[in-house]
Length: 223
Image (tube, rainbow, N blue to C red; front, side, top):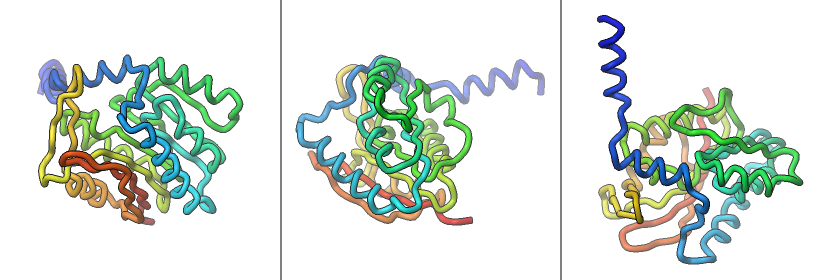
């Protein structure tokens, strides 16, 4: 097949929906990811994250935080791990995170688009918290899950946190200028299990109409 035709086919396959592009641009220019109405929610997330990290501390050395926002939870990871690489799509949030990390020598922040791929190598602990619901297109979501799992070393741990639908079906809700996609909780969990992740712990942080927010601890099976 001629190269120009192959490029055209590839471009069509990689094309994102308008809704996905809108959400992507929103998060690229985002200056605040703390959108929960309950001010105690993020304190509960921090408490749960610390409990998970405490439980795996002996074997944990290197960490990766995907979609790190302003770095609040990346810096917590840095208290338990020898080194942490954290990245986010938003330049503003990375600048803020870098300021917060001024006194932390083991947490490094960089601007990166997760849709362009993850950093090379694998990590003992990988975190991807609150990301899946921002990925509107299904092919981007499945690629994200694949890359997230591949970033975890054999025997390493994955921490995810998501708001998920409890209705038995995905749920799309307009959130200002973009649409948030809350995937069915069992489908979301099965995406990870099918890629070799074993669920160790699941903690509910919040609930609302037809939705539940969970933080998960997974381990990647040894191979």
